[in-house]
Image 1 (cartoon, rainbow, N blue to C red):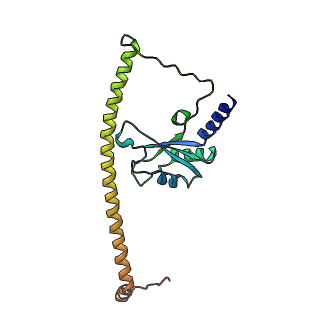
Image 2 (cartoon, helix red, strand yellow):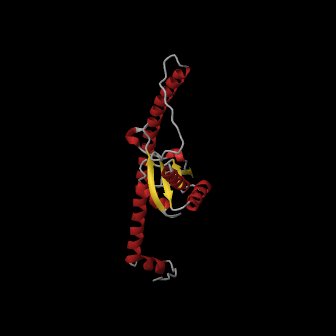
Image 3 (cartoon, rainbow, N blue to C red):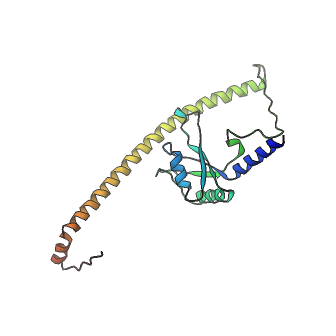
Length: 199
């Protein structure tokens, strides 16, 4: 009994130094999320929360465990006060303090009892359970449709970003070739403009 109390106390400390983030891009990986939050503190672990309602269990939420509770509070404050994007996607990440129920590996709370029972079709709760089952099914279809649109939007954004990056790179190459061929000096002489060479 005493060991289970200590184990649960250690788990509660872990919860205090962990933040829950969602609205993540489906292309965000553990390494990307860790790198993004390492600028605020020492990230110990990033664990994606699987979403079993969507195809391939694509996680759009994660638990980020930090070195201490102060770092967790700082990150939550930072995310609340300014837009924080990961992978350059056009939707800001949301963050809040983690709760014990979010951890699938949480230890059993000492003294807690779980009671399960089967519902008979004549039980009034049976109809409620049936409605919940239909709602979950409907939500799963809606989430699947939204995820498909979201992935298409992010693919289009990634293509645009690549095109802009390539165009900018070509401009810099052109400028570099003009400066390297002394064309800038000849244009300066022609238009009587003084050019200062900063080396």
